[in-house]
Image (cartoon, rainbow, N blue to C red; front, top):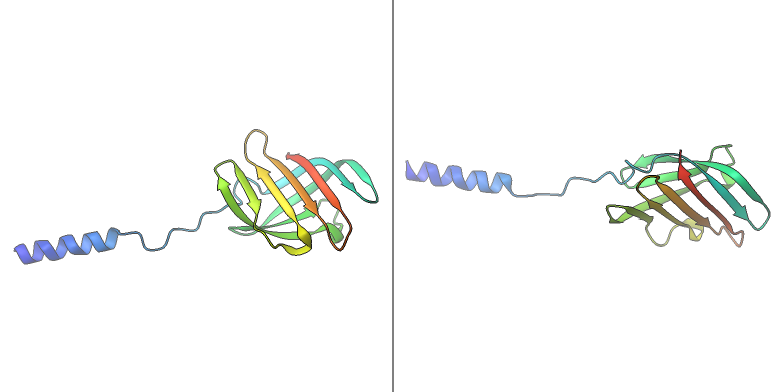
Length: 125
């Protein structure tokens, strides 16, 4: 009986140990439409709307709501704390994106595709 009890306890301890951490969905609070101001070397547009679309649990695509694919970019995310999500370094086009989660959720986005500087700053609508 003791052997069975020890075996059962060992099985429960091994079965309850954390294997791999469950994937955390970083996109939950940031996916949606944002309205703000767009500025570039060529133009300034206010108001300007962008969509943040989920690709997977730690990747989003940021694209203008008007369908302009030139400014469309995929961003791999990392979380610095419960209220901030930023892109991982070494993204295409020297992209920086930072989301501040709260009321309201905000997005600050900069892109530099081959010398063309563009930025967007807005809030989730």
